[in-house]
Length: 629
Image (cartoon, rainbow, N blue to C red):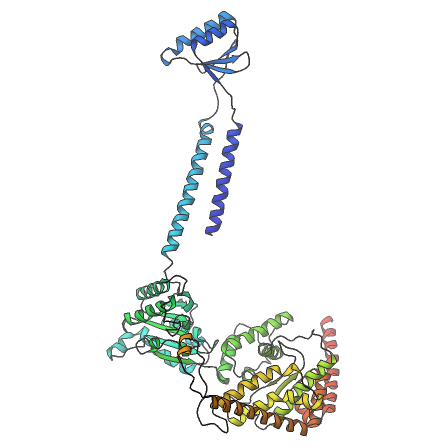
C-alpha cells in the first residue's frame, strides 16, 4: 500500500511540472523596451513612433520596427506626463489607440504560482514521509515479530478439536486450570511450570496442541518462530526477546509459543574459540527473561522442537522449561479419530471405513493423514466425482507413501522383466518368512523415484522390534537382488535403495542395539555431533580393533541374510516365476491376488482377472444407457 501511494505522489509531481511548463509556454513572451519621457517626444518628432497605445492608464506603443515600448512616467506626475504624450502624438500625427483592460481572472494569473507552490509542498511531504518511515523502521527493528491471537469464541481451537493425544492433553490441562483459576494452585503453594517443551516428530501436532491450550484457557496466544529472533545485526535478537516478554507481561495471563526453538536455543559453544555470536546473545537473553518473571505472573512459555538433543542444557533445567511433553505418532485408534476430524467438511462416501484406513496407515502423523484426505478430495474433484470414496482414499494413501504414479513412462520389455522379477523377489520372501508383515500390493508401475514397489502393511501396532524381525527385514530387502541373481543370472542397479537400507539397518543392529554375535552387550554408536569445536576436542572412544570387529559383524549379518534369502527363493522358484509373470501381465496385483498366485499359480489369477474384466466391461455400458435415458 505504501509503495502504491509513493507511485501516485510521484506521478502527480510529474503532472504538476508538465502543467506548469505548458502554462508558461502558452503565455506571450513579448520583449518590451522602456523609454523615458524625452526619448518618446524626440522619437515622435523624428517620425520613428508607429503608434501610441493607452491601456489602463499605461502609455506605450510600437516603434516603426514593431518593437513594443512603454513610457517611464514618474508616479507623482503620471497624469500630466500622460496628457503631454498624447498631445505630442496628436501634434506629430502619431495614431493613438486605446486597449481594453485584461479580463484574465485572479485565479488564472495566480495558477502558475499556485502549481509551483503545490509541487514544492508535495515534494517536501514525500521527502519527510520517507524520512519518518526510515526512522520508524530503524526504531522498530528490535521489536518482536510475534503474532498475537486474541481468543475469539467463534473460531478458537480447543481440546475437542485435537483428536487423540489423550495423555498429552491431560498434562496440559493443569496449565489451562492454572490460567483460569490460579488461586487454587497458589493456595497450596504449587508452582505451575514456567516452560513446557513439546517434543515430537514433524507433523505430530505440537503447534496445534499449543493453540488448543490457549483456546481452552481463553487467553492471548503469542506465536513466534525461533528464526524470527535471529538477524544479521548483533543485539537485535536479544532486543526482540525483551520486547516479546514486555508485551506478554502486559497481556498476562497469556501463552508465549516459540516454534522451532532449536533455531535459537542450540547448545552454546558451537563455534571455534567460543565466539559470542548473535544467536548466543539471543539465547542468553531468553534465559534471563524466563528467570525474570515469577511463577504467579501468568506467563507460560510453550516451545516446540524435534531436536531436543541439541538444545542447551541451561534451557532445559527446572525453572525454565520444567516439563517435556513427548508428542508421538498416533496409534490406530488415534488415527481413526484424526481421520474423522479432517473429514468433517468433505463429502465422504458411505463405503469409507475409517477403521480400515487407520489400520492401513501405520506410522502416519496427523499431518500425513490430513494430507492424505486432502489428496483424496483433490483426486475426486479431478475425476468430477461428488463424494470421496474408499478407492480414492486408498489411491491417495499410495500416492502419499510412494509418490505419483507414472503410467506414461516408457518402459522396455527387458526393463519390465527386470522390475517384475525384482519386486516378485521381495514379495515371495515376505510371504515365506513367518511373522513378516503381509503383502498388501505389488506393482511394476513407476511411482516417484522407484521403478516399482512392494507394499506391506503390519497387522498390529509395533513399538519394538526383535532381532528375528530385523533379520527378516534384511532378507526381504535383499529379496529383489537375490531374485535377479537366480532368475536373470545377473544383477541390476535397481537394488541401490534396498542396499542402502540394508547397510543402515545392519549397522544399527550392531552398534546401537548390540545384536552382533561376537561383541559385548554395549552400544558402540556415537551421537550425531553438529558442534565443530566439540568434535575437534573429543577423542574417539573406539579402538581400531573394535571398529574392525564392528565391520566384520555387519558383513556377517548381511552375508548370512543374503545366503538364506537365496535359499528361500531357490526353493520357491516356480512361485517366483508365477508372481513375476503376473506382474508383467497385469502390472499391479493386490494382496489377495498375490496370495492366490502363491497358492494356486498364475493360471488361477489369469482366469479371475478375465472374469473381472468381462464384468467391468458390461457395467459402464449399462450406466451410460441409464444416463442417456
